[in-house]
Image (cartoon, rainbow, N blue to C red):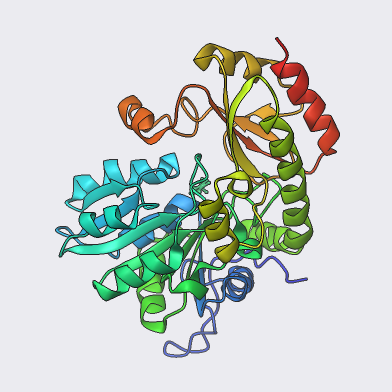
Length: 358
Ligand SMILES: *Cc1c(COP(=O)(O)O)cnc(C)c1O
């Protein structure tokens, strides 16, 4: 196993002869092991590790200059929404959010200065599934780069770069690390010119992860396949069970959606992982009652760990999104999002059953 190079600086042989590494912001051996592994898993040429998922996203946003335009899917991670709306827009980068399941809407929203197209599939928290290839092709034909946040499925279930997407971003905090003990992020690309630009930004902006965190994510990666299969099996059983429950209005799971969505999902993804959402009958009050009653599911943001979590997107993960936007998009007050862990699924089902009982 690779050692933790808990080292900030590396000896030069002479002023013009640095060792392979010279300073750990610019590169660190433990980080490089992680970056190589991530590049291979996502079928990219290079990966870059960051101190958080949002630090990784920030580097991608910085590919844009003032005057450029970013087109993003409307239902996406709350922190990404905030980064685009409250940081990028303040710096003169215009942002438009559209429902990207509607390709005509994507075409209509495209502008001559559109530089980045930001996708999340399945989306958070509504589990919408996008046509990655069609959107990537449209972006390329119109001179824009496409970015896909692949945090929910991980490279075990989906490889956006294979479909023409230019950039994959990850919050390695989630499934890649998988044990809820690290915050980290990554950018993966399949083009050398783009890799150079991201490397420049990683080093120039400096939001790099420490070697110990890289070591932990690497360790998590080694069990990614068994974890993802187990998350998927547990979540699907619970989603199927919830779908028949009288207190549940709707279950949002990509494998249990309408036929078009299921076909699209099967084209791009080999499984769904542990994430899905559902709507409770009875509105905000009913949702809050279920939250307070759940015992095995911990009320928490984040996802992708071995333990099951329940989030209330309205107030937690998507608190940064204005209420009218949430309502328009369908992030309603009766929506709960589950990150299904690796516990016995029948224990999880019993917990949901007691929490949903009248
Ligand atoms: C958590 C998350 C992020 C942000 O990552 P951090 O590591 O929390 O900065 C981005 N996208 C998705 C889909 C996430 O779940």
